[in-house]
Image 1: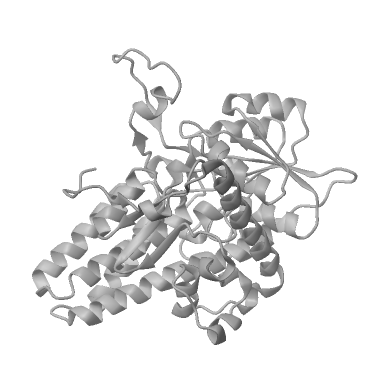
Image 2: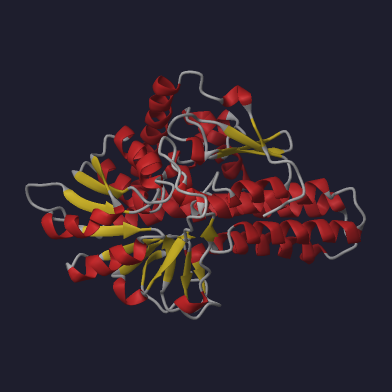
Length: 427
């Protein structure tokens, strides 16, 4: 995707100078607070206040002592608890933690326009549906702020073009389109020609709401998911996951990993099998370090070895996320989810999908309407430290695949444990 602008720049002040020591410190601090947040959710999810002040704290903007004291730990932001956020706001920019550089270094990319945010999303600097929905909303807020002094028509062009760029960056992720639509609706509710500052404030309020709702809702998801599983006698609960579904990509508690962290926070022994998740190896690079730093035992396994694992070892459940869920329950998720689901069904291991209701696209009837985003061949063929294949070598790299609803035991959402069909927003 071309935005017509220079790529977002990295913030050199935030690069870790001593990678080996600092990456351990990063994941340790990040995941300790994530597991504390998950524990807090068990008793305080009902107390979450959906206010823009909560979203501001969550994103590292800082809260006054009086306000912070009123918020449950689930909503305490990075500035309060001392770990880097997946993104930060301030000085007219969004600074996005570059997931491609983890775990070697924690580097933020500075995005000053909605197009910059779209480019970072497209290039997989950030991934995970709950996170991408928030970034899309704040990308729209940047566009609204930058267009505040324009006349009505050029402002309309900027807002609609930014919305299109964000949708096109990750067309497979439902939360991105939903966040863009909410922001555009806030603008249209004021009606043109409206006051640019008023429109910017309205869009920013929607973005704050998207962030607050996403992160508080994931607390309930983790709690409800943990309650589904009984503890085996005399051994840990054995869970298989795919891709990165923890705090780095899903907010303070994560999605599938949020369930695991909540189980661990309650004192129950759990062990996680993490697929490496090709081609970017996000399971190895992101999920495994988060789990290890949270003192949750885990083992990385090759994507191609899942069949062996399910046959030879006792796995109690598979937990997966979802980028988009059709009305009938078919879902798009990280490539490799479908074969895992088939193997799990063959071995009578239940598959649970962990995703907020924002991932549901009730306008899509079934899996045939779900978008399969494709990635450049180089992401599969060019691997650091290995000889490159001949230049004429072709490769097909789908970012997601589609898993049929009949392979899913249940959908663990921020609005409870659900079953399809999904005909609209569930309250």
